[in-house]
Image (cartoon, rainbow, N blue to C red; front, side, top):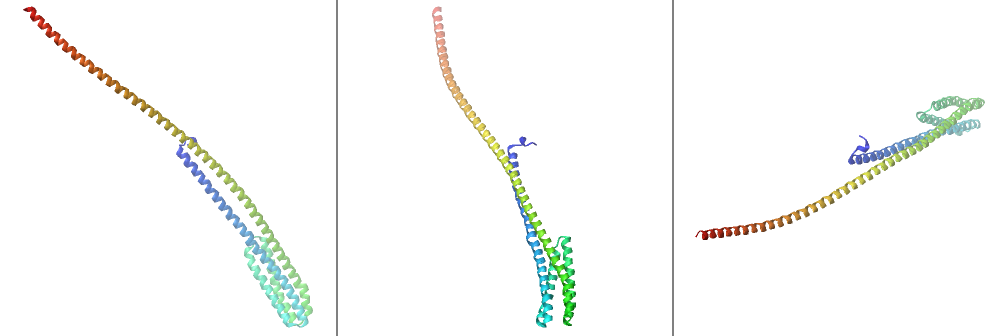
Length: 289
């Protein structure tokens, strides 16, 4: 059934239904947009920031381990066993911190590139921890030349590899953070446009509903006017009928009075006829005599 052929009630219900549906659509679109935007922001600000923090901690611990390694070597060469032991403790602590940070960052990685860099760092860390035991053996045996050679030929390349890998990991995570931020901004713009379009559609439906309501109001006013005109016409007809009835009643009264006069005249005529008849009879009797 076309819209123009619908009755007034169905048009009003249809308009109200469409308006309510568009309002629900606006609410749904807003909730969807806010939820998606919240997820993107949480991923960008929370997850990516956490990975950057862990990668930065690895870089810091690599630098701390390098400084501790040189301190151990210098302290051992000068005979400061307490400082050498403290340096060894710092080296072991740095190694544990690096392994802990790598263990925490691995489940958060989303790209194969990031996983490859993390594996390079883990391999370099394991090699560093293994070579540290050899380095400690040289120091304990006071083979300082061997220890110095290890610091230059073994540890320095390992540390450079770890620093390069940690810097690369930080760069990867910063790039991902920028991409997530750009994606969140793009989604926010899309959500704004989508909301605007839905609002415009809702405004159009509201305008259509208003137009229909105004048409219904005009129709109701026209019907009320027609009913009022009909009532006035009925009242006028009733007045005319009442006037005719009164005229008819008056005519009937006058006719009844005329009939009464006619009846009286007829009775008088009958009386006179009877008297004439009696007089005729008497005249006839006299004549016979």
